Image (cartoon, rainbow, N blue to C red; front, side, top):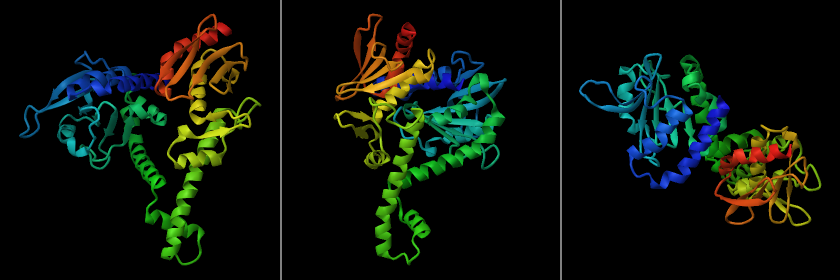
Length: 370
């Protein structure tokens, strides 16, 4: 089920990219993005009032007639409340006053604040029946952290498990906050962070000169560490050390760390003696194609070869069995697909996630060779 949700989120991400600019109101955001999320991702029937109640009303003190955008019902009880903002709007708990008021009255345990792209999930960890001020789960559809998909799956209609959600919420909340702190420190380490790390490796007095010296060293070390991790992930994804054959290339941790420091993984490359450069973006594209094709054949049979003008993905490392070509060496990227006569047609793409739009064609190509 998690795999299905991931595919549907990928589809929704493409819709966001295509339609975001034309969405001008909160109502349009709900129709274009939030309702598909409730329906396609979570699996609830948005047209069945026994499952999804739009404009949900529950009188709260002197605030009578106030409405929540959606209430999701499971087993006869309101379980999830959803408040929507316009796509692109910053999600701030200060803008969730209605959710706070409704949370206890409706006896819901999950509240969601969304702008159609970002989804912030809240519960009542800090005090019973009182919505927390900090979310326990944050999902961004257009930049999905796939590690969080199994947690989202617990909220889906067919797998709804409130106890499991609540039990995992505290860990998710603090792990998420810690990840955001670490991300900020990697981007720009503050004085306390530099001092703490310096104290672990430097035995002398930490003077102003030492602090200034180690500020640069800490930043450099973290950049290289992150580059090493990127390289390790690529090696693991490719099933061994990069540079598996004479036609392949390797990405060194030094290369990766240098480009991570520039916050541009897509620009990280390695260059062979013949002048061919293989970018991390090409390797990531290859992994997407490989993931799609493995429904037809063993992943080990999907190979790649890089050339001067395009990056080829092949079945059985055989030039007579091309699956796709990635034309990523120009400002406009293209995905080259093949018909039954092995005639190539190039399709313009703006991002790697658009490769998934052609999943059926890719599977068909692999199937005809096998």
